[in-house]
Length: 77
Image (cartoon, rainbow, N blue to C red):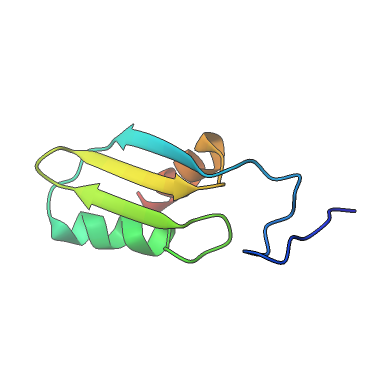
């Protein structure tokens, strides 16, 4: 059973904050809104998500694994 810290509530067996960058085809701001809904800030394991249409890039920060973040992005379409 994981032990919860008093600061941040993150179980000690979860990894520290990670940053993952994905190259994603983004046509408009609507695509960024879809990403924000699929990988919402404040969701379990997600601290911050940024999306750039000109750079065709999505960056996620948190303890969510790259595989899980990618799965959520693919689910967004």
